[in-house]
Length: 331
Picture 1: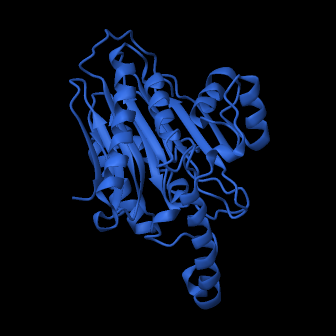
Picture 2 (picture 1 turned 180 degrees about the vertical axis):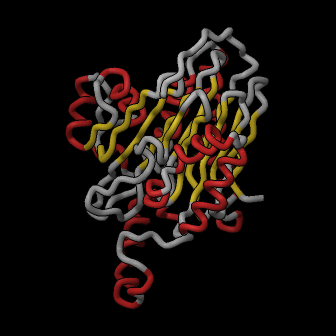
């Protein structure tokens, strides 16, 4: 049900932006000071970009889109440039965006030539009658909408390509010697190279929530596999009455658990706080089902939560007064 919106008096003290850059086996012992600094710099840049939009009176939709684009353009994250490779050696990207004030949403999946997938997802929401477009059709739509189209080689990074080679090698060994450990496409817990997504949730001065998520999916994925990021209600969800959610982790579990909507429903029907609802789903339900990852969750009062059940999650927030923090590890 879409609730009628009463006009809200703008209040800049409300604005909040929360981001993530993926979850997984992110351990301090595996991180060099240089690498940590590089990640924190891009996360801070993303936060400041979105914050500026909100400070200047922009909408939460404008803020999450601008924020995600910064991370899509950075080779450090598994979205846009630097996306992971499929089994066939391609980059296939997914993205979604949702407007909490109208419950409108747009998503694209399995695209390989769109420079900033999140912006095309927004065009799907605003300029089409649909919610999700995939593959060639999504790319055709992006061209018609004047989106920036690039050669697939643009997304290539040597680091990701080497990850694919290692994954293929490990899977061969695994299939030969340890069939009980799962099939080629079943990422094992703690396999860092399988995880990674970027996401943002925002609250603007008008009290509107928005969420956006963008990803390259899983290393060595096959058969045009699509994860939770572009699935509305799973990896991306926003509703002004409850919360805005962006998830990262083992997508199959997040889809089956309808994570984003479940958090919202716990808030709506059980009157749980955003923190308690997010923790109930991520730290209890997902753990019981064997799903690894985390979410960023934000309510209409600017309260937020960033729970994750993996070793680490790139994450950060910025409040109305400009106070911000970027975090990586559990402690």
